[in-house]
Length: 480
Ligand code: GAP
Image (cartoon, rainbow, N blue to C red; front, side, top):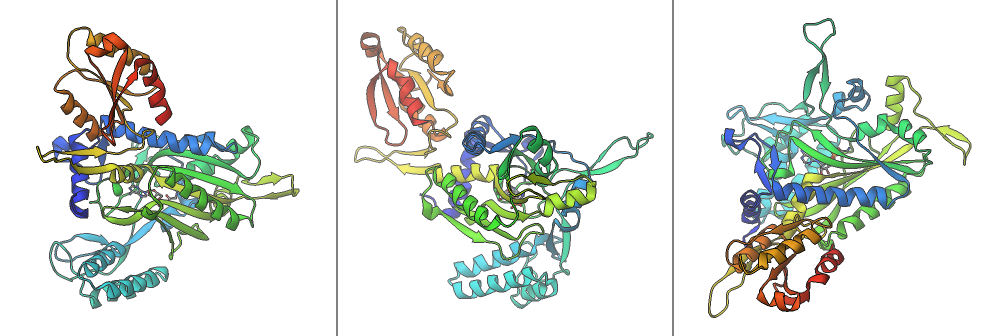
């Protein structure tokens, strides 16, 4: 098994080789922190999205889904606080001109200390960084960088500028520049949540929803990330799966705990062991939150955030009411009161979840025996998330075997994603399916013509058994 850094690189290479994820516009040397999903990556991503969507909407009678536009009225971002507050403290190296996010620069140095066995120093450094970040003390943060002699990895020098804030939103123009209509600067949304907030009353009234209720959404978000070299972990264009849960003011603590627990259960339902997850409470709260934590997963690059759970108070709705001058209140007939609801948000990155599932599934296995050396790369996806559920292989290309295989394909392909192949030795075909994580393969041989049985081969154990053609469909359906 590769070590962790190598493992991460091996996953990236595997994703490219087997049609999961490619660098965007690769023929032009790619675009930093932007990626395209290939034929298997897009299936995997869609399966994760569907699983989340179903668990939020279908499984909760009081949560409905919407699909709001990426472009929103620019005042949205004034009201949400993103124009004034959605920025990160950055520092530039004067020699290399490379810009770093201050916390990432210090964390990188802390990782180095860890590797050198100086764990105590790294813990103290990170605690001090958290304290200074919480107080917005940029002078103190610069001193911390200088006192620890933290250097730029490119120039190797510690010649730093002062720390400054940089807004992470991308902007573009809407309307005609030269015509009568004035050009307006608008933003590519940095979170999907605001599309939910501005539609809060539309959905509540048309759906006759009573508090507590939730609105869920999956969609693209855009951030001009500075640190952009962690594959699909940190992208400039990515997808979020967010849910805003509208509640009575004063009940936010209990609902915050409820959603922490519910979301962790969802993560565990992916078959990932509990020790690979942890909660991380935010020290420095976002401008909208009165409590917040992350669910972190132990990626090959260490424990990192996959999902955020935020108690957003009435910050967003109150500000939209103020900026739009439209009432954002709800009449609660149980307590006979008008109020602006409080909100608990669950926000999970779809691409990060793809990376988590890939990291968990990726296995390099040594299958050597006394007689021969052998190995395989297998993606042990949960069957419900696997891009292809069933591969159908005629053992050879003649004697009526392809016809039987085609009939099986025709019976099954409407129920789940199947894959047909008749080229190469059967062992090679199995290995290719292991590499893309297909949980089941069936092989049709001459015996099939006699007894209507096929060989079912399991991805994880590589065990094979004879089963009737008629039970293929249910075997796969049971697993997914
Ligand atoms: N609406 C709240 C919000 O956007 P966030 O913690 O900034 O909160 C939520 O983002 C989730 O979106 C994160 O937990 C992460 O999974 C994902 N995410 C954020 N920035 C990302 C990026 N640059 N690339 C990929 N995923 C990202």
